[in-house]
Length: 320
Image (cartoon, rainbow, N blue to C red; front, side, top):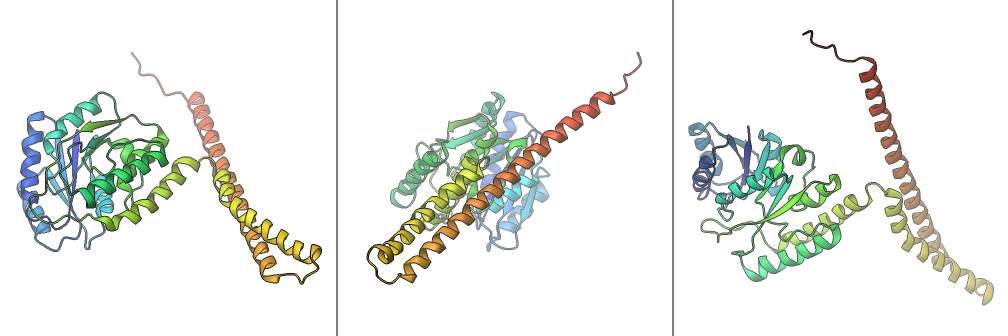
């Protein structure tokens, strides 16, 4: 199968039939084999019922159902896991993404790109609660990860299945897929897409997600920058503790030896605690470095062994 379209829904009973019809109208003329994976994220309205009705009528539709609301990223991850297409397109179920842009995404993938990210250049959302936080978040994500994507929050994206299925998704991580995938060096393109104002239902996004995005950004920065250098990361973390511990102990000794006053046990004890924490972090970095290096060594030996076995046991030739 060429294409899988993954669409998570949460309380979108007014949009799900319209979305299904819009996808059919956009993709059928392209002439590729496709499927739709509709993910109901624990909706409390008739979304699940309507999705099942659509699946009974259209065999190209499959439904993934959650017992409760887990959030957009887990819903998207479940849909991606169930998708069977060579190319996977993800999009929101609120009709703000335009299925008519899918054709352009397929063309970009055919050019050789592994990930194509939508860019809502004329975004139809509220300025204060949606646009401004999004611009700040995109700037921070680009600076922190070194992957300057203009619109990380746009759900309309296309991936080669072999790439996206290897990326773990949780929390709000669907925003950071290009940054996480950059470790493997994929070809990433951006594509201007249309964006429509919401006509039915209520938005599930707001300022409450900012803290989650910031926490996830810290995780992504760690993974993207220090996966292959755990000792560097832990050493950097230990430096402030080491400095504070040394300063505290030096101050306590100065009070005792230079001024002849009683040793300030609280300050000296704090210094010892800081230095101990610093040493623990540094040793954790050493352990992480050892684990990483041993893993690389094991993979190299396995690859060498596989190559040796292949050379010593050549496949039999087909007689002519």
